[in-house]
Length: 638
Image: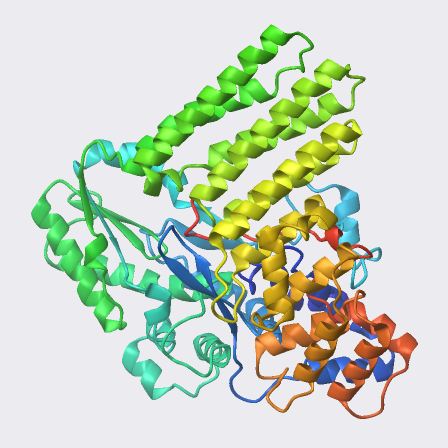
């Protein structure tokens, strides 16, 4: 293995395993990955500065934790791990990948587990793609988006990436044919309650682990790095990164085996009397007798307690054959609506009034059908909208093809009316389900719409952009809360969508102005608020950021600011000093003041800036990438 191959293997987990799915648009580890991979291209002076920024701190670090909407009423706390700890996790993956695979291959119950290591390039990649990865990406430099396709995970996974795929699979049909009863259970706050030392108990016996806790091993290293990522806490895992899910999977697989052993000791045979399917921390027990369900639940509860975890009995549900949940039923209804919407939107633009009226009537009827489903089954509805987003994405792609043709004025009117209906449906879905994953899908659709509008007549383009801006601002206004110093990620990403469509018009809207005012008045002081303000400054000339930049510099130079301990401080520093929209001299002096020692000149500083970025700042603020490749979160099924 060459040095390049070894370095690539040691770093590639940074691309997919160490970040949460829920991030601000444009946030990526690609620059981080490329910087470490190509660090040899820097001068000695530049390397010393970068080594200072990424200097590993002895002991714990503080993650950047923030709340996201999990449902209409519930929130999850998601965390970004400090970059220096991310480097340690990536190295652990490369050093112990076979141990990880073996530790996740023991349970017959698991529905989602890493099953094999895989090459970084995607299956079916051309020889050119393979050659470019093997040759160290010669065309990609820090500060540029990686142009060569890569897989969205370090490992290949079996059997179902998302739980809803299990519920629509032949395997469930077979289980339903074999067993008449189903009980669903989940672990109460599983990731927050996992005791990190218990990974040693899961890999080896508990007594052996306690007697040999200082011995260098996979489980000892994994335990230590997860503690150092989280204030040295042994209670709880950081939610978000795939690495945390693998940590939990190793422990839960051991619990699966203990449940099976307990059942066998009482004469219950797996496959004959019962079976279990577990998706991360969601357990599905199948049996014919209620007493059997009770016994398996008791075995599960006892095994979980050994690992300091407990079942959430309030969420326990029993089903009798057929196993149709409210989500399953709503998905079936939504499927038909999605097909009708797509059929209407992808018709060739019509010049005649009557066909256009019929299309409008059909689309309106589909929206009413969605409203009725959402009104009666809101909780199930928000888990069932994947096909609607898929239909809208396919439709905008087809509409973009029509826009390339030589359309008449009446045909453009028809196409623009459909585009407005698409926007209306999109924002209706967001009003029901204001979370990050739907915002990501919406942003992708709206980016395609923006590309279509470049070809549209100017008046129509302005009309539709204004409509999108109005809807975006209404979405922000109805969900924004001025209280607290943190800007919610959902608001930040909705704000970035507004800048993506028409930055000048967007920043003049009431909701956007309120957000900007709170940031400028330092009511919102988190990392996300800084990104929004700097993006707005870079893309809309009317947003002034001079005083704001000075305030950030003063914060960075304060005694409380610590880029080596605090992940949020690290991100603020790196993206502030590397942002091209901020005065160059202010950034240069701030960088040298923080890093100390012999200062580097302006030219060397300019060249090191792309190595520091976690946001791919461009010449104009609206050119951020929406999403980098990562596995979808396990708790997001739509």
